[in-house]
Image 1 (tube, helix red, strand yellow):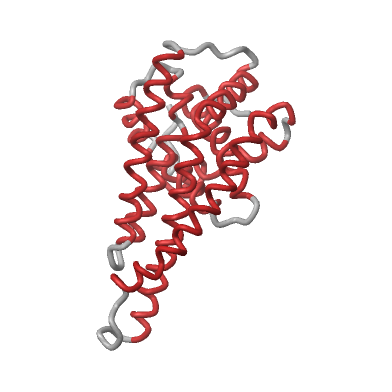
Image 2 (cartoon, rainbow, N blue to C red):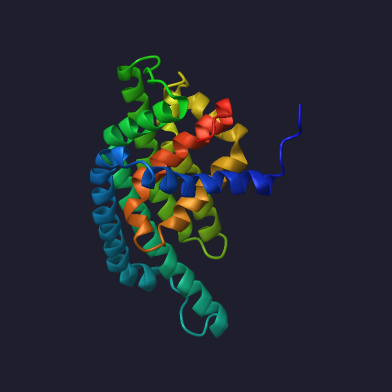
Length: 243
């Protein structure tokens, strides 16, 4: 049995699957009808989230920005910039969470189609559509609770943004792999265990997803691309299947 690659290589492999999701989707026009509505919701809600973050900036800055003269000027500027970026990023993350929640049924259908294409056979729901729906709703609830935590962690000086981004990446990867892992009969607790086992790949995928939020136009297609990329990631890690 060959040894597993190093952590950085595994994280890079996880990150690559975000790009792979875009490429897989772009090359298969028959999947586009399932991607249109999630993409539109993603674009609208991401813009709304950014506007929400911008509106919150004044209050956040007044409450948490360092007072003039209390810190060296360069440090005060860095902390203020981190606070502003964290607030805007949190707003975008809220928008992405809302888009994922509203698009879950379509994104799950898209994930099933992707798995069928890669496998070459139809994918049967296992252990049942009702069971999958219940566990998908639990994953969405987990994501909804995590969103304000991401914002609050980002307000902690110095280490806050790093912790916030890491937590957001983990939660995003957890939610995006819900569909393919649920089809394998894994309950929510087992899916969390799966992410502990493949921690580097999971965080790499989540971090790349967050970075894509900052890329103009790419962020508008982010939700369907993440559904595709997460499915490909699970297929590769679980069964060695590569699209």
